[in-house]
Image (cartoon, rainbow, N blue to C red; front, side, top):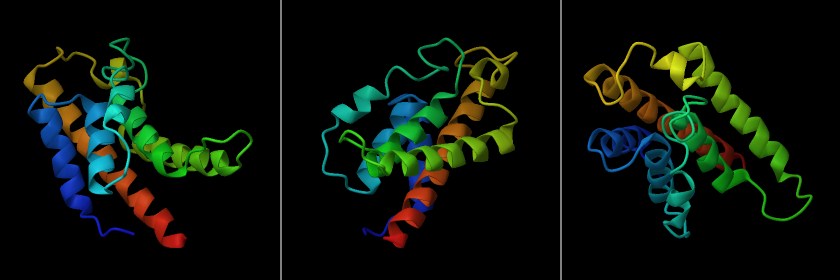
Length: 149
């Protein structure tokens, strides 16, 4: 397994968001893909483009969490029918979900950003932190699971 710098993963994802390069879910997928040097097309980042601001701006599930779950799927998901690896992907996704929920009390973007204007300094600060935190936790899970193999 490639040696990855977990702290750098956090910083890179935060900077993608901070600099306006990518939104939360995209930043996490790109950062994880690049940090682990996955031999897949950058087209995978496009798959994350519908999740920011709680799934396309609807305010539902936090895009950072969905991006983290997508990144976990790159490693532990399935591509063949009836492959039991789906169980690991689901368990790790629940773990990431629970980490975020325990820290922030919910995953609802509308609730997490209540009283904030989209793009305001307080919104940006919070979502940059969510993006970096989820990227970091996702990377920790990936490293832990790959070390078991």
